[in-house]
Structure formats: C-alpha cells, structure tokens
Image 1 (cartoon, rainbow, N blue to C red):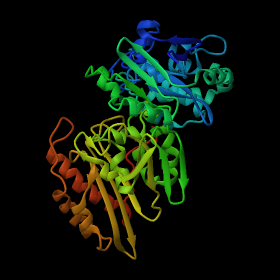
Image 2: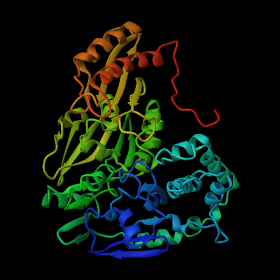
Image 3: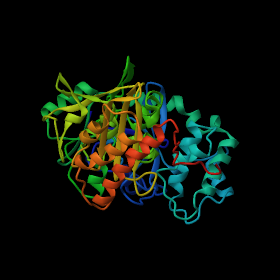
Image 4: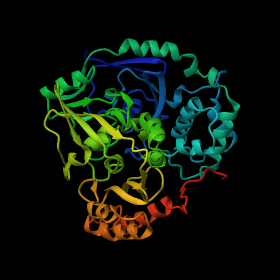
Length: 482
C-alpha cells in the first residue's frame, strides 16, 4: 500500500506524498489549518503541542496524549488523531474540561492552554476519580509559566467530579472509530516525497525482512529522540522505518519479565509497578506523560545514550536483550550491548526485539534520577542499585550508573567494596569512596564532573539511609495540599 491513512477528528485522511521527517504538528497547522495546537519548544518538552492519538491495542481502542512537534506523521498510520478543535460538550458548547478551566481561572496568556486541556482530557477519560497527584502526573509534560498550576489542578479535579465521561464524543463514537481503524491496518505501507521515504512494516517479520534489504535505514519507534534530530538538527533520516506499533508483547515467565522492545514506558509501567515496585517512582519520572506514551524501552536501549533512563536500572537488575537479524536471534547481557559512545553490539540489519528482566524479589532495589528540575527533564546522573542481603551479609551487589561515562555501565569497584561485607553503614561509605575508581565523569551543560562525582558518592549514603533498619523514608514528591 502506498497511502498513509488515519483519522483526524471526524475526517479520514489519505496521503501518498509523505516524507520521513514530516511532523504531525506541521501537518496540523500548515496543511489542515488546525492552529489550536501550538508550537513551543519543538522538542517534546513544553507540551503546548499536545494532541490525543487513539490506537488499537489488545484491550481495545485507547487515547493517549502525545507531543505533535516530535510525533512524525508516518507514525500516525491507522490511528485517530484528536486536536483541541474536536472538543465540545454534549450541547455543542464548551467541553467540561474547558468549562472548568474557565471557572477556576486556569488560563492566563493562553498559549499553553490547548496542550494542557488535551492532557487533562485524556486523564478525564481514563481516570474519572483522579486525585491531585494523578493530575500532577498528567501535567508533568506541560509547562505553564503564568498560573502556577494550582488553578489548573483545581479545574481538573472539578471536571473529574462533575463526570459526564459516558456522554463524551470519544466514548459514544469509540466502537465506530475502532471499526474504521481496523479497516485501515493492513500490510506494509511505503510513502515518499521524492527520495524522502517512510516505510511502515506490517509486523516484526516484515521489519526483519526490510532491514535485511535496507540495513542502514533509520529505525523510528516513539521519535522522542529522533524527533529532535529532525526539528533541532535538521538531519535527513530517510529511509526511515516506523516501528512504534510493533513488538508489544509482555509476559511474566517464572522469575523474569519479558517485554517486547516496542512497549512504551506507559505500557510497561503496570508490570514495573507490580514486580519492581521500588522503581515505580523512577519510571514515572521518565519524561512527561506525553513522552512516556511515545518512547519505547527497546529504542531507549538501542539508541545507546549514556544518559538513557532505563539502562542503569535494567543493568542493575541483570537484564538481557534479544537481538534479531532476519530469522536469527541472539541473547546477550544488556551491559555487554554498550561498547563505547555511539557504538553498540548491533550488526547491520539487527534490531532489539525483546528485553528480559529478572524480578529479583529478595533483593533490595532502588533507582535514582538526578535532574535540574524534578519532572520532564534530562538526566544528569542516573543509578540503579540491586543489593542482595542474606544473614546480614551482602552476597551480591549490582550497581549501574548513567551520565558518568561514555556508556551506561556497572560500578565494579563499588560492587567489590560491598560484596562479602556486613550490611552496615561502613560498607556503603567504603563503596562511596570506591566509586571514584569506576568513573571519571565529564563536565557538560547538565552538570560538572565534580557535581556528578559527589552525587554518585551520596547515592550510596542515600541507599543506606533508605534500606537500613532505622529506615529513612524518602519521598521527593507531594501532592498539592498534602
């Protein structure tokens, strides 16, 4: 098929001339004149461009807020894109979210308001009983410099309490929309504008075949990183293979979790919360809600960034990955995948297909993310701790850091300082000193080398304070009014 097809509000769109780098935001504003969706940062950070994208899952049709500025148009095949212009109440007037924003003075300059309304609309549909903390989580990816958020949170709570979700247009039309989307999804799709090509595989087998034919093609999953290559660095990513709809399987198999590489952070979050509860708060600090709905675990690994959020935690847990080329597969430890800056153990035509994570129910686990602001920010230092204690002795320590070297990697000297020692403060003080032998961090715009080294040492002390018998509970986040 040589047409990109999706639903836009109440209209079906068919396009044959689509380039790999075309963004959803540009299509909305320039081609469709739907200018309620704003461009702020053009890097998926401010949320002014938030729209909803409805897609079919095993559980049915779901709608999620995403950043239109870095959502590439080709990834919208067989989805339902909903913009602020589509919102209305049962009587054709303001939608309950919009009415609540007016009543509680949730908008001042108004530039960020459409994106905020769309994020709250998604929350309103998915969680009618949302509390203040859930509202804050929904707004992680929306920056507002006028209101201070309190009136926005009040508006969201008021709209949720008012109800009316069953009468909403997206609820009443859901079955019809699902049927239309089911009729669109089919085989491989190839669209182009001149030599600028975008390919959408039918399934993972089709992806494997395409990569054998075009091993140098750019793989695009959620585009939370690739989108910036386009909008900030003006890179040519053609030919690009769009894979965000693939490899969505997940299962718990004995003492390990098996995750398809195409699972988004949001899709994997319930399993992480259930089987690695100590990492739940860390997981919910990966980007904002919009980024978690787009970014995938496999791509975060395959991209090989030294400040990727998932590798430090997954390495500490002892995760392994399955790499596929054609019909051949191989399994390696995640820590062995990262060779050097920008270099991974991945052959031409090979892609990350699965992530295998031991559950480690007896271990003491923690994950830390150090940033300039708490939510929706890029990591300066990330760390995963997995320490097994038996009879008061540390029998195994797996410690991994991001942002401290050219790749995410284990702190072997610090591990050695812990293993075989009593689970006591002295052991963690020794590990804090030993970590200096593991890393020589760099200074960049996010943090100085000295700051990173200090943070790494202090994380050992924090882990001890949290895990010791006297236990210092650390909760960095409080809901409004708590």
